[in-house]
Length: 79
Image (cartoon, rainbow, N blue to C red; front, side):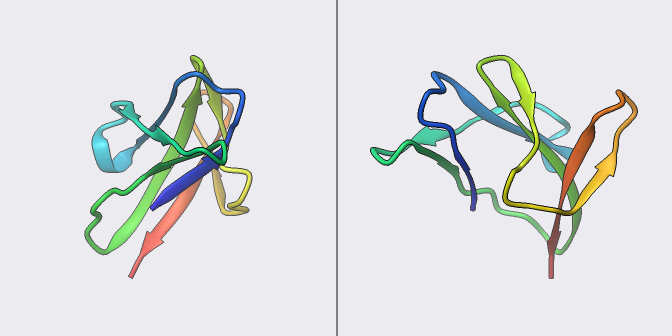
């Protein structure tokens, strides 16, 4: 499960190497936290959040890689 605390966001999606960087809409809870459950096979994946058309890092994940656009992608490892 991926989560992002963005109570002021009107649309939040996740994109990553696990979905060919195609944004997948997340669901906002009453607590302002957006969530999505993604089934992933074991491996290492890069991802980012898209909040109201702006890319965001995962603030709860210190593991990052520099991407080709000069920003950073968060890293998720599934065992």
